[in-house]
Image (tube, rainbow, N blue to C red):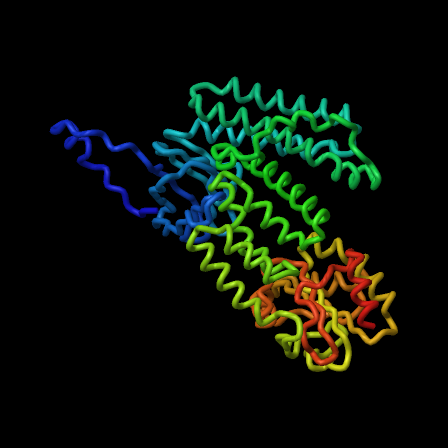
Length: 457
């Protein structure tokens, strides 16, 4: 993205010559943040991490930015305040806000402001809808009726918004419908949870509206987060079925599923995620080989090569990276060397991590089952310093057992970095000599963990 844009004089040049007009491939965003508490403003694409600008605010809080090939949602961040803005080619939009009442003071003007005003109104309706009765507690017919009513209200809001572009309106119509379909696809699992019906199965035909869905539409994948969620959900289901059918690692199955996608845009997006998933797979060699066979993007290949080199030293039988003098909730400090002579099952987690917290009941059960065995259960929190008290309190509130440690520098801790941990929870199993049994050990809720421990102990 360019920080300066020269427009003066272009009109005069076009009047003096008859040359082919260059298509506009940018958007201009300018404005002012009154009473800003930081002199920096971040403008970042929600779809493309490479499209990120850090701007210096003027003394009065003013800014301007020119964004190339901009179509999509962007996040504007100033200190702790943030807002979304939608951009397309040709937009020349002004964004103004007051940091003292940021959310309520946001105002858009200029080309593209009407579309952004609609999106704000749509978001308000979405918030009100989500803040009411939880629809996932409803039975099937009532659930569909509630979401259909919501869909109708959003379409009515769109139809009554004057002077927005037809292409924008068409895209929003699709997005509203995709959001409805996404809710349907989530219903079974969400209803089990919220209605407390663990054995619930949706009726035949409940998802019939998804039968004709094309999961390889490049344009919709780029323009609709709801459509992208549907594609990812379908991908996960296909991968899960493949994993069970062929008895292979889920992440390897996910990669193999990605390799069959015909759309280069969608395939490369999944392969980009796959460069991280290599840190989770239980079959490193097969995963790496499969990735190299399907990937064509040089940047992704370079990234997977680097990840593979880092992970290679974490295979079974290699010495484990060590943590040294981590604070122990019970008092003092603990190092990995202090635990030699016992198997060690390590849970890397944080108080803000939902999936981590979901594993706690199973972890406590595992700890109880193997209490008198030659194994230590170690939980390492990667919480930041400002969550230290929350970590201490959660140990009490959740009655956490085992050895409770906190890493010395959260995700930047040497131990975390050396294990190439990209997401949590992460489970690691070591033998009494401190060598690696499994750098991607089964999680406590996985029945395979007991099989592994029974064989070892």
